[in-house]
Amino acid sequence: MSRYILIGMLLGFILYKSEAVSWYRIFEMFRFQSFHMYGVIGSAVISGIIIVQIIKRRHVRNVEGQPIVIKDKNKSIARYLIGGTMFGTGWALAGACPAPMFILMGAGYSVFVVYMLAAMTGTFVYGLLRSKLPH
Amino acid sequence: MKESIEAIIAFLSQPWPWYVAGPLLALVMFILLYFGHEFGISENLRLMCAADGADELNEFFKIDWKNGGWNLMVALGAVIGGYMVSHYFLGSEGNIAHVSDATVASLNEIGIQVKKGEVPLVPEFISWEALLNWRGWLMIAGGGFLVGFGARYAGGCTSGHAISGLSALQAPSLIAVTGFFVGGLFVNYVIIPLLFPWTL
Image 1 (cartoon, each protein chain N blue to C red):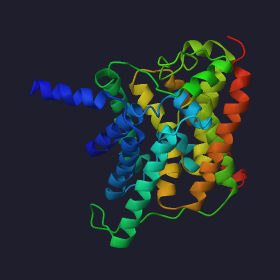
Image 2: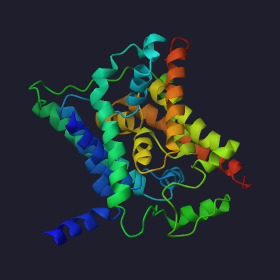
Image 3: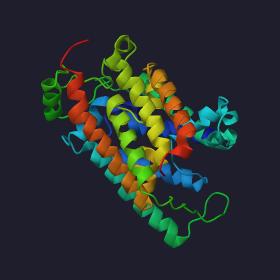
């Protein structure tokens, strides 16, 4: 279990020190006024594509000796577009997505407890409405 | 020995450029894959709902949240990481966001007063005091609600779709990220300028 705490701490350092936890950085990103956030996400994706291709071609195995399999996401448009748009709306309002929420709570910005309770409420309401929503 | 530790702390306390942060995020994704898991932070919101008893109310939360214990530990680690940076690795400038001059100009134009080189990491309108008016509730609680609802509806957030999903060349993740920008651009250009002509 402790290894996951260390991974989370690394994540905390990365997003804090690259200022991705900042409301102003998210504002700047949606205004296309700096390459910074595009550099962070873009270089993560390019590195990630290389890693995933190596995993697939070399049949890299995980810690338990099983081949690493990345599940394909279900094909649909509505859920990704509508859900994604709602997510982006919230992200730009609060200036934080779920990982920065945890990091900022640790940094002493305790108001993110309110954000977290609201996010849990949003998740719960989604669960209640799920069967009625287009997927 | 003490000097070299101080030198390492000073080195890590500088702002990290994008070309350090991005590949390290991919490394986080790879380490989790190696241990048999997929990177996705917003799943923790569902796990916390289930742990709080939502599993008895609704089928979507009938999951064994203890199987997600690893992910809750990642979230706990992120909290600890945030604490450590804010206490020991902040650097001489403190909690500053080094945004561009163009961003400072845009913020001032819509009535958000910030000075070049002194832009805080978290604005004063994201604070407990901000919850004394409706704008704070809209931005903090409204934003949180939409993030929580939207992330589960779309099946992932920035980590699950923009990083893991795009890395695995998943078309659904590209649609989700397009949605992130549709929502984000709408708020940025339409909603935020409406929220800030007045000081509340």
